[in-house]
Length: 335
Image (cartoon, rainbow, N blue to C red):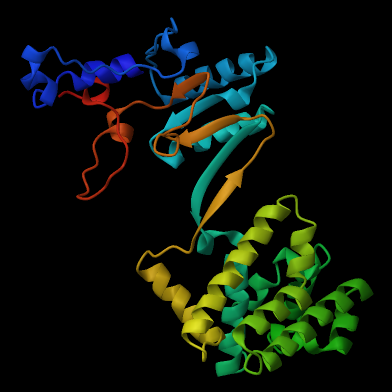
């Protein structure tokens, strides 16, 4: 790599050493580690018909390394954009090959946070006008953290259809006698419990400060219990912690912030493309590193693969001011 860099730099005719040739001054990049200074390894450039062939070849190569006992944590796959690695991640997971990756994500796009936003939207609508959130209720009742029995909502929907619109979803959830007549005792008790929970949240939404209300929702709504039993517990806990931290900062700036105001903040962020950014770490013990070229600067690996070296991925950015890392023009496009 240093030899390739030296060759590229040598084309720069404005270098000071080119103007001082009479003094015999020369500058050459050399590896500082004696063990790496004279390695015989040379980069290999492989061409594939399309990205599917490339990913299949790379997967098979990594699989062989893994089966041979090579420590995958000493290897890395580099790419220009995170989305280039999504298919490879999926293939590695299905093949049982561990990998390590870190990426920035918009917390507002995470399903758990989106579900909580819908619950808050329902509460705000109902506060403005009773039964105004009726269209949201069947959807949010499907969220797994309520702990409803499987099929309970289908059976309730069928019962309400038989009632020919004489009862709303909200009213039905609070009608313990009606639920007992329409459904099994297990279904009736579970649905009535969620109905009473939502009514309790409606009573507290304007009474409590925003942060305390969210903590109440997470605890009494079963969200925290659900997250603690989830296979991706650490990630979901991180999402909740980041959300509460953001709300705490917003409330410090605006002490009068309530649920409705918080939803308006989220809507403005969506409208203007402002993410609630956090970093997601995908860890597999002893796994191969999947990194953007920018993230890999300064790191060292025994084996390195460059994924998808095509102009559309690694070419120069067309947006003014974009400092995205890209490959030398001699590799991906004409000078």
